Amino acid sequence: ATDAQMRERWRLAVKFDLLRGRLEGEKGEDPVKAVVAHHDSVVENYKQFDSGDVLQNFLSALCRVYDPHTDYFAAAKEENFTIGMRLSLFGIGASLRNEKGYTNVVSLVPGGPAETDKRLKPGDKIVGVAQGEDGEYTDVVGMKIDRVVRLIRGEKGTVVRLRVQPGDAADPSTRVVIRLVRDEIRLRDQEA
Image 1 (cartoon, rainbow, N blue to C red):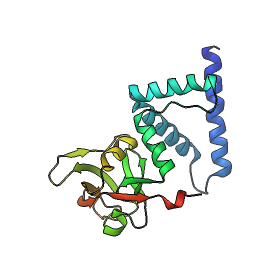
Image 2 (cartoon, rainbow, N blue to C red):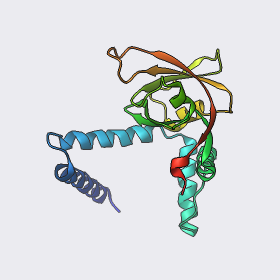
Image 3 (spheres, rainbow, N blue to C red):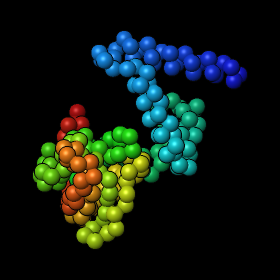
């Protein structure tokens, strides 16, 4: 209700995170650094919100007032929902995660174009994406993960080129270009 109450609630939430970090953290891990890193990540995520994200959050909150099981899906979220229901998509077959502004490859889908090609590996960082054989590269460092995913997904049989910083490279300035042809990816591990 007041600014003082808000600050006290925030103080207690941070204190809780620190105590949990001390109890659950690994030996030698500094819980203060872990909590600061977590909150920095949250702030970076909110900085990347655009008007579509704000509209989606507002309309979802409004929908939940009338029905707690109803959400509003913007076009990108609706596409992800449809993929989850069909258990298939057109892309390269890589699970991605955003870490400190970089799009990291977490895992590869067995049988997908990336796994078959064998050059893209978990731990690699995608720093640029280009469409087709001669399209211009889009720098994806600092870009929201859903936008990077939209650039990588596409129609079956089309080419996407990735500029990648290999995770095992001795020199962090090393970049390699990986050309992949998009194909249908079956999400078998998500089947009931």
